[in-house]
Each structure stands twice: as C-alpha cells, then as structure tokens.
Length: 389
Image (cartoon, rainbow, N blue to C red; front, side, top):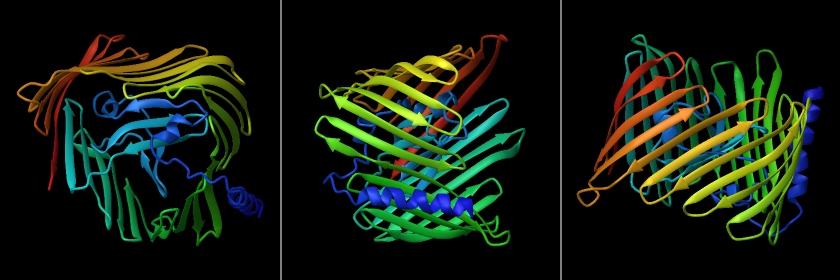
C-alpha cells in the first residue's frame, strides 16, 4: 500500500505543476542538453562501435515513451548524453526521410558483435528498429532487438532481450504517448509520457497479475524559461526516490553557468559547472562537486573540426578515471573515399587503434585493442554498410 501511495504522489505532482503555464514548449531536441543544469557525459556513438567503453547496461530515454540500451550503435544516433546521478540519459536520433538500413559486424578472435538498424520518418509513418547480437565461443551470449513504429497516431513497441519479451501498443500524440502491453514475466505494462508547456514526465508501471504486486518508475522534469535563466526541478523514482533542482544562466549564446542540488536516500550532492555548445565544440565542465565521498571534478568534451573528432570524459575523486576517443579523416575522390585513423584510450590502460576506410556508404574497419598493463592485444576487423531506398 505504501508503494501505491508513493506512486500516486509521484504521478500527481508533475501534473499539478504542469497546470502552471509558462507558455514554453519543452525543448526535446538538442537544445535541451544545452539548457540542462546538471552535468552530462557526452559521447559520440562511434565510441560504441570501436572502443566498447561506454554506457554498458545503462538506459537512454531516446523517445517520449521508450528506452534503448546504451550499448546500441546505429547510424541514426549521432551523440549520446548521460547523467550518472539521476541515471537518465538522452540519445540524439536523426530519423531519415527515406527508409534506411545499416548492418555492422565487428569480429576478433574471441567474439563477434553485430548491430543492425532501420529508420524512416514521414508525415504518416515512423519506424525505428535496433538490434545487437554478441557471439562468444561460437554461441550467442547476448542479443537484443527493439522495434518502435507509429502509423498516424497508432504505435507499436516491441523489445526482446535475451529470454525476456515485451510488446505494447497505444496512441501517440504531439504532447503525449500512452501504451499498454504484456511481457513473459506475468506482468501488465503501462507506459505514459507527457511533453507539454515545459513539463516532461515519463512513467513505466509493471503489474504482476499472479503475485498481485506492482512496480514502477518515474522520471519527471519541469523546464522553466525566464529569459537567460533556466530552472529545472526533477523527480526520479526507481525503488529509490531522488529529487533534484538546478538552475542555469546563459551569459553568452554558447556559454552557460549552472548549479544544482540532488537529494537521494543515502546522499546529498551539490555541484556547479559551465557548459559550452557550438557547431564545433560541446563541453560540460564540472570543476567541483560534493557528495558523501567528498569533493571531486568532472569534464566532458566533444570536438568537431574539419578533419578531426575528439571525445573525452574525465572524472576525479579518489582516483582519475577517463576515456578518450579521437579520429582523423580526409575525404578523397570527391568524397567517395574517406580513410580515417581512430585512436581510443582509457584509465584501464586499454588502447584502441583502428583504420577505417569509407567507400561511399560502406566502412571497412581494421585494428586492434592493446592491453597495456598485460602486454596483450586483440586484433579486430569489420564492416558497416548503410543503404536506403
């Protein structure tokens, strides 16, 4: 009964707040990352394909009513952002107008990874499908397929993860999504999402009709825009209640300062930092934060120059943790042939060194991962093919 009361309060609170009309549509695209007054790790999706260093096992809110695994790679995903405090994230998906497909295969002596994607969006139809398979010792050890489709206002959402299966159907609208379905764990699933006048709320309720038990989580935030000042209160519930409040002030078109406070069951976190967003550089710098472990600092940078990409994430508290990924490419033959050199390194002393040859829409990948502490290495190779109607 206590859980039911808690869920009721969580559902009602953001909706009551939403009744206050600040005449602001919640920025659900890239601009929301710029005005988000909390630290975000920024990743380029190529990191997943080459280095496998990021977001393993975490979830990203990639749409109004669904989640995808952070270890997914897709031609539609350009950048990913993740907040490790609230355990929520965002994926920037660029849906193609024509039906587009891709398949990526990365192979080494021990394992094979396969990624596949499907995307299409027009005024009537929206399709988004992601699959990944991990083969080790000639047997499938991990597999996941997610399909999301909308036709006019009717939606279908299917997810297969290992032996788990769930399917939902519902109604999609510009300001809300609602879907209901079942899984193979004797649960009825209900998911709701609202995106209206600054309010974004997402709920995922699971009712077990055999044990008569209920479980659920909620992520809600309210985006208040007061000129250059952006204020966002957040409530997250996933067996643990976490409340956050942050404020961001934009001093220049590209530069903003922010500060925030987070309260969870076992910790209080205070932090302050600066964000910089432009065409060539995305950066989130947190020079100081404080939690139960003491003081620390973080930084995340994604840099795009004419021929160079650089992505780095650093964190220091008790020790320095980091991962960095860079590439240098130069187009030849009027852009039909682009060779690239890709290098990645992290605090676990893993060095990734790859050559990527892009021939029109095909990428041929060859390289190695070097384990610097054990003096071992693993040779890898693969291919990515993107094609469309």
